[in-house]
Image (cartoon, rainbow, N blue to C red):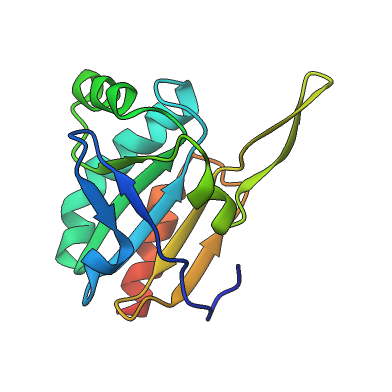
Length: 153
C-alpha cells in the first residue's frame, strides 16, 4: 500500500455481528488501525488512547476503527472491560490485514510466525490513503495521527 492509492474495500463484523464496510463511510475520513491482539498491554493502551481522543476525531469528520484477528466475542469483552467507544472489527482469516499488507512474518524470542504488524492508515473521504504509519510504537501515536488529520483539514 502507498499513500495516494485507493484503500482496499473490506467488509467485517463488529462486536454485535453487524457488517461494516469501507463504503459505509463515504464523505468521512477514517483512521483504520491494525493491532495484534485484544487485551495485550500495547493494544489496550492504543485502544484507550483512540477512545480518549475520539471526540476530537469526530469533530474532524473522522471515524476510528481497529482491526485484529480476534473474534467478535473477544472484541465485545475487550470493549466492555475498557469502556472503549471505537469500533473494533474482526478479521479472523486475516484477509483484510493481507489486503493492507500488514499480515507479515514476525520474529519474537527466536521464533518466526505470521501476524499483524501494528499499522495505521488515514483514509480520506474519497477512499484514498492519505497517510500510513507502519511498525507503530503506541506511545504518542494517537496524538501523531490526530495532528496529521488536523493538518490535512
